[in-house]
Amino acid sequence: QPRPTKPRREEKPAEAAAEAPAAPAVELPECHDDNAQRITVFLTGLLEHMDSVAQVKVYEVEKGRYKVILVGERLGQLIGHRGETLDAIQQLTNYAINTGSDSKRVRVQMDAENYRARREQSLESLARKVATKVQKYRRSVTLEPMNAYERRLVHIALRGNDAVDTHSEGSDPDRHVVIVAR
Image 1 (cartoon, helix red, strand yellow):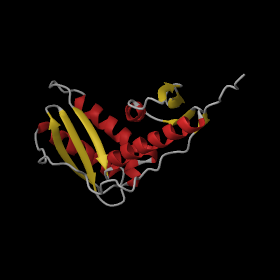
Image 2 (tube, helix red, strand yellow):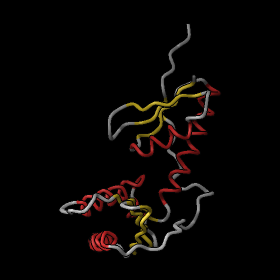
Image 3 (cartoon, one colour):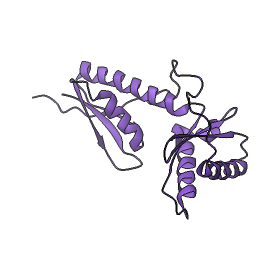
Image 4 (cartoon, helix red, strand yellow):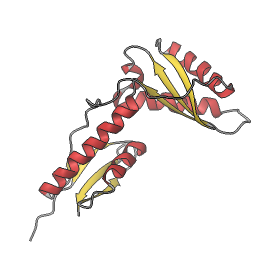
């Protein structure tokens, strides 16, 4: 009778993929509408309190969706461990911009040093690598805890792989993806 396989924790993904683009790929003109100005004013004040000299660049991706890129040297402090500080700044900005506003809700996505694109590449690469191990050894693998967006990236990266399945387990903040052989 086969022994049940116990999922094991997998190593953490490298934060920076070697093939990651060096500069943010934003091909939109900088935006200066009312929302963009409110975003800039809020973030400039917040960054001053954090003793950061990062510059704020705001782009309107589509109506009501803004991409904010923090530009400067050594912004690791603003990114934080696994992007947690960047996520917190993004959440605060969304809250501040949408509170007390009669206008339609806007969404703000924050990035610094092209962290989000590098993290996406890193997670997709990790997912493929772990899927190969799961196929080879026929053992489940549990990844590190991730936020909902990052878990979704792993699920999407392996959606077309017929040899493995993915599902999420646990509760936030320790919710994680488990990759299992079919």
